[in-house]
Length: 523
Ligand code: HXC
View 1 (cartoon, rainbow, N blue to C red):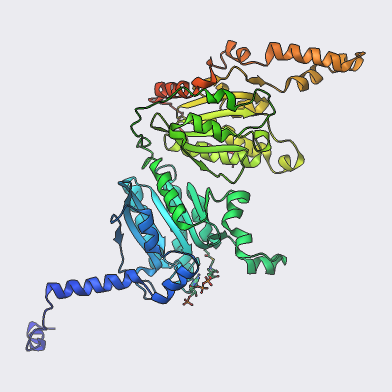
View 2 (cartoon, helix red, strand yellow; view 1 turned 180 degrees about the vertical axis):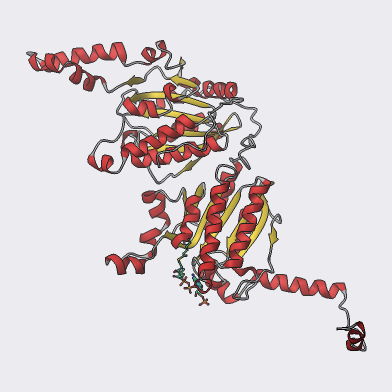
């Protein structure tokens, strides 16, 4: 086409240009229309007891801090946003990247454009060293987009693994999260769920019924309580979205933005260190239960802590808190549940927590009061050895400052696993009351003196004498301290100051490890 031809086609009068205020109005109207969404679908979302994606982001982020990306992007279905609201914002002034699936658009299902937006914020989170929070509420892979949707999920999973241990990843499940989509929360560091409205499962109730004849509801199959207390998939369970998102903010306040940044310390000018209550909290009798949470209240600043997996494997307690303003991760046996024994679930729970703390430079405080491993075929068949090895591996590998406090008893292999000197704790403290041994005194006497006891005229009397002797000679903290396995025997009331002092000394700890691709953690 020649220039002349083009000139001929020019309209006689140029099309009227719109003024900037007009263009801005049009833009504002469109943005408002997109943000408000479909009134009927929003009303349905509210009727189900759920907030919209934008309402959730308002609750999660500091007021007015949300910066959205690709709001005008359309997917194959033609809807703006393609069912996911993505961008960044701040929480207590610290930057985070976020995406919130919008169930009011195609059930929040994931198509190619939807996935590309998620990939974009994940890439930006990793590039800027910022945490990422995913608000999940979705029917899963968008059925009309076939394999493109599956490809989109794969891209999320790959990015999650790449970012693992570099930036904190938090998944919040606020609606359905079915099929392979459930692997995204599973790959996150922490998963929040809300009761009644959130479900996660690989195959839904209809498939379950067709395959096995078993009839279950969505919540019976994959509700928040199932994952918060039986499967361990959910790290936090809440009654409603408001308290859930408030706790996401609380968790973020305790985490560094990335693995190169120190955990966020706060000024602390009132150490309030002497805690006489500690001595009375823990009964001297080795089998009397007490609540390890009461010890944490005395140990940590303002008696505050955030417990991870509170409803699962209650025999071990994992929590974040602060000591003299510095973030610490606490692992404690919980004598109130199963006498505080280690079992398959407790080992997995504590191992994952220890690995997270290590990846993000959070010092570990281990509070030990453990009678041993839970015996039985169920445990052995369930892989108690394999799962216990995870916790052992996690501690052995951890290069963060590690302080062990033995409160009352530490027996057998469980003593070793709970961050003993032999596997690398930096500072081991013991209360004067404690018992560290291969096994309880009476059980030890029954093994070692089996022949004498069988031949004795009065075996019970002999057993009592031998038990007292064994206890006197071996079962006290000084036996361990004399052999360098315990650094100090401390007054319980001084635990807070002793741990804080130890962590202050260890703050600049660095450890070199031999070059390797990665270790082979027993999964
Ligand atoms: C396309 C979907 C969709 C999906 C829901 N919708 N899920 N559209 N792809 N996966 C649409 C519905 O058609 C409906 O559109 C709207 O979203 C709301 O859905 P409802 O069914 O009306 O809502 P509700 O009754 O609350 O039920 C929610 C639901 C159900 C339980 C999630 O929609 C459902 O079972 N969806 C299919 C789930 C599924 O099989 N997903 C694929 C999983 S496999 P209209 O236009 O009517 O409003 C998977 C593989 C991932 O995800 C693999 C990754 C590796």
